[in-house]
Length: 389
Image 1 (cartoon, rainbow, N blue to C red):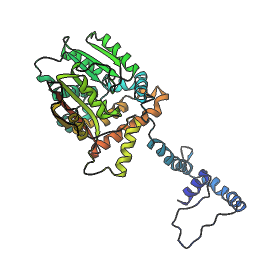
Image 2 (image 1 turned 60 degrees about the horizontal axis):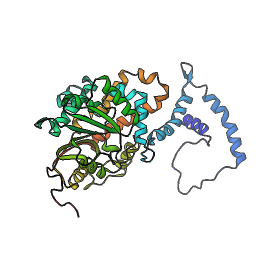
Image 3 (image 1 turned 90 degrees about the vertical axis):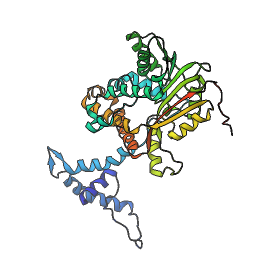
Image 4 (image 1 turned 90 degrees about the horizontal axis):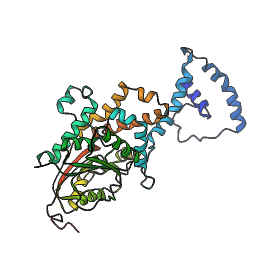
């Protein structure tokens, strides 16, 4: 330990010392500059001797360990500091998805669906890694369709809006499943995603889909435009969650179906978030350009406050989606070449891997939940009750 302390001190350009409590009665006096120089000169032979310490494969052990020990806190601080904070004016959400789309790495690993997958209790028991990662995402869409009540409708909705469509994976899947009598419109803030979504739809010969660059908080559609509004993992990026819900409800036709899936923070009504939880949430929000998270309960309140959404039902699907976080890391481990051959994305990929693991832990500890909310718009199309205060 003495050797390590000396090397650490030299590496940091500070006086070498061994940390120990200083008695309260002892005064700490700085050495004069000349005395410090003399001490430094005296310690150089010791440092030189340390550099010739035992080696492994020709590499001195102590200097390497010391270097790692010095660098570790600095590296940790860098990785703990969020790098992609939200800024609506700069459209950080659109730019981030533009970059991901251009890189192609996210599409390579996640396929056409930029959302979590669904895993049954039996699949979790057998081992989530045995399930096809991409198939889990298709299973999620099927489950979300069933949850929404879509499968029980007398006929498929004629006009569907996919809010936060990504590269259009879900939009195309819905268009294919619902048939040619249904038309699906996807909106996103990313021009690159729109271009990719449109190209993929053309490749599949789907002419009942279209994609637009549009802000979900200020949609250009008239009131009562869609028979169904679908929103999968887009609420996370909305700075105004209430407006987000209101806009989706506004463009939904009377009697129409609205369904939403989104990452949520735990409800803090009875138990406020402590300092550690707040710090963890801040990282998760700011690393992937999220303005803030809210609870499932708060989303339900926003649904209720519209005044014309009824039969509102919510669930927390954290248990059947949590495997997605670590599964997405493992698919990269099993197939590293897309990242290895792109050195310029190594650092970003490292950060993304760390963020994925932190999301897993936050869902596992209950700090985060996976909110599912569905509702129908009243057939009258106006407030079914007065919700104003």
